[in-house]
Amino acid sequence: MEENNVLLHVAHLKKYFPISSNILRSRGQVRALDDVTFSLREGETLGIVGETGCGKTTLGRTILRLINATDGNVYFDLPKDVMEEIISKEKRLEELSGNKDLNKEEVAEKEELLKAVDRFSSQYSLTKIPARKLNEYRKKMQPIFQDPFSSLDPRKLIKDIIAEPMKILTDMGSEEIFEREKELIEEIGLSEDHLYRFPHEFSGGQRQRIGIARAIGIAPKLLVLDEPTSALDVSVQAQILNMLKDIQRKRGMSYLFISHHLNVIRLMADRVAVMYLGRVAELTETDILFTEMLHPYTKALLSAIPSINPEKRKSRVILKGEIPSPADPPGGCYFHSRCPEALKNCGWSPRDIAEPIGSMLEAYRNPEASDFPPLREIVTDEEENLVDIVLASPIADARRTLNLLNELIEKEAVKGAGIMFRAIENITLLNDQRTIRVKLIEPDIPVLKEVRKGHYVSCLLYDGPPKVTREEALENVSSTN
Ligand SMILES: Nc1ncnc2c1ncn2[C@@H]1O[C@H](COP(=O)(O)OP(=O)(O)OP(=O)(O)O)[C@@H](O)[C@H]1O
Ligand SMILES: [Mg+2]
View 1 (cartoon, rainbow, N blue to C red):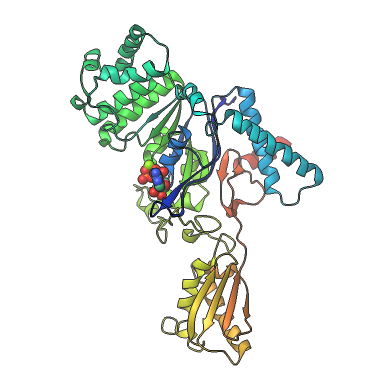
View 2 (cartoon, rainbow, N blue to C red):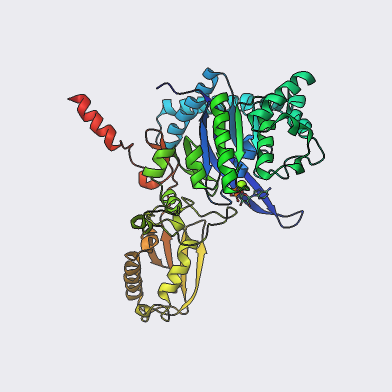
């Protein structure tokens, strides 16, 4: 099957909000979007799903350039050959960047690619082009927001509300606009006399319909829908969602459909991107995501959907801990600290391990540590990946103490949550004879990778060579026979 052209390509998009406690001093930043990459084809709906605060709204707003990106590119509605060249160059650049030992030719190739990507970025990316050039694109992408009550100006007639984008962004005359409005109001299931009323005369669902009419009046190619039905009653939701499907079928528009409701995403999206802490954890076709999800976070997220099958209900994955703050994300894979399938190289850092080491060594919490010398404190060094266990006094028998520590660690490591102890590279006693230095291994950082055809996952569990699905493997066997 021939795939439609790519309409929107988002590449390494980042949005960091500064956190400032007072006007002068800025205290770090919130990584609301942290390197997001995906494409959206013509006529396609890409669902964006993830828990609150994972960056869905920020993604939509940054693509629309309602807020400026910190870094990265948004390519939209470019000539087919330009879009294809950008995507293929970026893909090659990524391959080269992922390879640590490049030969001389590859280093030169990488240099060239970096320059080319920079040129494309400054010439075409919506994140870079001057604001005056934006109108041309604004005509072709329109937002639909969650709240149908605040998004319509209460002092204006529906007629003027729907007409506004056509007036501002097109050169349509007022008669032509009015003709279009009459079609639009029918299309969204209201009638001509509704044009002469004010927003407060309508229900939430009707207002959202009016918002949709306003957005599609200028025949955009892309709608960015941010929780478009989350504020509405369930019965009204279904009507609006069906209407959006009809409109899309008729007009061939693309939708970026943001929702934290998995059932809504499943109903609406052709493909889904699952976000966690500003990053895409997994991206694939909707049916595949709901049946053959790969990322441990997706598994946990989807297991929260109430199941009618009592057998299946048991398998719900309860994640430990809270979602970490995007102002201070964990090292390595952002999900490692809550991941039921984490490996030793997934990102364990001193701050993950300091507390558990403390509990392990304090005899009143762990009787097996009663022979271990008393602790004074545990000091972490995130930069150097070190945890220093400082004892109350110098020890006499270093070998015995280190052996004891190793034994205790070994016992912890085989427990359910003990995988973090496997991240310990070595343990040494410093010259002061009272500081035991625990060095952790360097974590690996997963990148979003195509692990099966069209199925992207950012997880070290799938970091091996590309795997084929069972069906593909069988197909290969039969075709070689
Ligand atoms: N203007 C802002 N200034 C500072 N931080 C912000 C701003 N907007 C969003 N954030 C932060 O960025 C992160 C992502 O927020 P965002 O609203 O994009 O999440 P979301 O996925 O849309 O959540 P929800 O499901 O609740 O709508 C959050 O930590 C949020 O607090
Ligand atoms: Mg939001």
